[in-house]
Image (cartoon, rainbow, N blue to C red):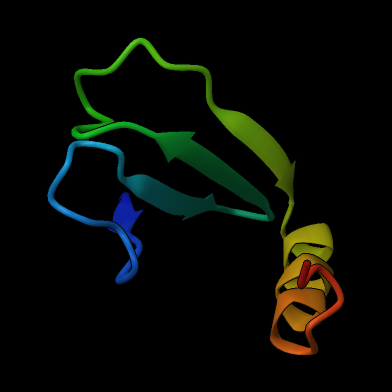
Amino acid sequence: MWRKSSFSGSNGECVHVAVVGDTVGIIEADDPRTSDAPIVRTPLKNFRVFIEGVKAGEFDL
């Protein structure tokens, strides 16, 4: 099941995330069910490390 980021706006450029087993899918699309946009897939453990880094400010410009 796709979950829309709470930071996505109403301009059609939405980020959705889905967890299936031990894999995370990420897509930028207004509706991921009908989009032909590429889906980025990564292991769940890598995604968790990435989120920890985001929260810690590791990617701030």
